[in-house]
Image (cartoon, rainbow, N blue to C red; front, top):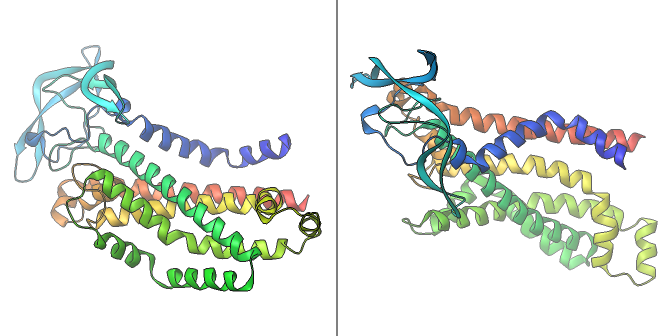
Amino acid sequence: MKRKSGNMFRRAGFPLVVLGIFFVSGLFAEFLAPYRYDSVRFDLSYMPPVWPAFHSGRLQVPVMSVSDPVLHRFRHNPGQWVPVRFLCRGEGYRWMGVISSHTHLICVDPPGRLSFLGLDVFGRDLWSRLLYGIRFSFLLSFSAVSLSFFVGILAGLAAGTGSGWIDQLIMRIGEIFMAIPSLYLLMGIRAVFPPGLSTTEVTLIMTGALAFVGWAGLARVVRGVARSLRQEEFVLAARSIGVSWWGIWGRHILPNMSYYLLVALTISIPGFIVGEAGLSFLGLGVSEPHPSLGNILAESQSLPAMKAAPWLLLSGVVIVSIVIVFNLLGDRLRETGQTGKAR
């Protein structure tokens, strides 16, 4: 068992490391981000990326000012540099809304401003907002996937091992959900609720809506696997000695489909991330100033914004990267499972 687990980790090592970096970066966004997601500098709208550099023997950033406010052009103020500090006191925050602190990994004093990935129209740091947006997208997707998997697995097992009318009822309901395009169904669910809701309320609605949409496909596959396993000798033997279906689900059926569920998990999470991003991009998700990968990308949808600040498209690059890495992880896990079965 140790060899199998170790082999699985080695094959899935690179995608797991990349996803771990994304997750940890989002989880500790307040500490890693030099600014809060709503920290504005209206005088530095669309300022391009400015990286620290060694000046006079110290790591410093130049002080920037606007040279052309119409074309959003900036210049370095001659002789004005601000030193970079590490593990320093900066803007106050509450980590995960619980622990209060002022400590940041990196910061500079005004009038200097760090800008690893540039600023948006309100002068908010894109690097900081991306970190907060990654955390929101990950936590929302994990919550939605957990709820969706619970409902989908339970429905699939009930349909696969239950009587005929239970199977027919669950599968027909699932087919109705699968027949409706998921984006339109998500938009319809979101439109039921009034505008002006708080971020917490919108998050709960989006979590429920994504889970509501995603359970049917999983339930259909789980049902097929359960129907094939219910005829196996170990299941028939367990039934003959009076083991309930609940016990058979936990001891025999679920362990025999664990690899599939793990691969399905790696495929479902990026789907939910894209679904959340799509809703936020359309203005139906979390609203400003709270960041998500979708509403950050929405800021760059106009041609003038893309011309003035093409770095705003980096949120789309982050979304695509997460989806690719999750799919790569699923492929690695599936290959490992097939290799294990062949042996």
